[in-house]
Image (cartoon, rainbow, N blue to C red; front, side, top):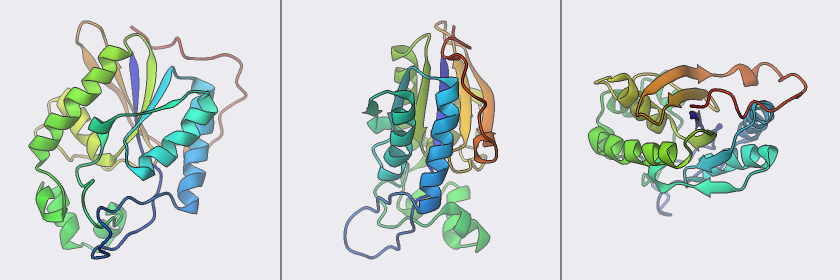
Length: 213
């Protein structure tokens, strides 16, 4: 089967200390545009199912994709982000540019310092959730819209990397995993963003039967 791991589109910024519980931002105007481009691109490819993290930024991205592909959207709790219970959402790109201490804590794996969970604990949550999807949709193509941390730790698992946060997924980027029924897993691509700068050709036939095993 082919699993497309997608990072959500750009969400709004939420400062901490607002007293309203965990931050759960929706998409910006640009984020909705990104999601629409992603949906148009994936509609050309075709897919058999669309699933999403329960967090709003992922759901709103996935809703565009599900509508374009004509599927109901399924929510999968296990592919939520490591900081789902934090009371703030500051884009990691902003923290990196400002060399903010929260950026340092994130890349150093000190996720509990930024309202998250321990990296190893997080990977132990994500990997079984993704593997359950692979088993359930054997022989098919599935789009899973989640988060940068989820994509990082699952690909690190497949590649056997010790560093769990090892690359920066762009908004609505696609990373592909090929999975066989025999248990083999391979990373076919990382961080695809062609849909943000190009348009898919006119659809002539579904590619939903491609790359299946």
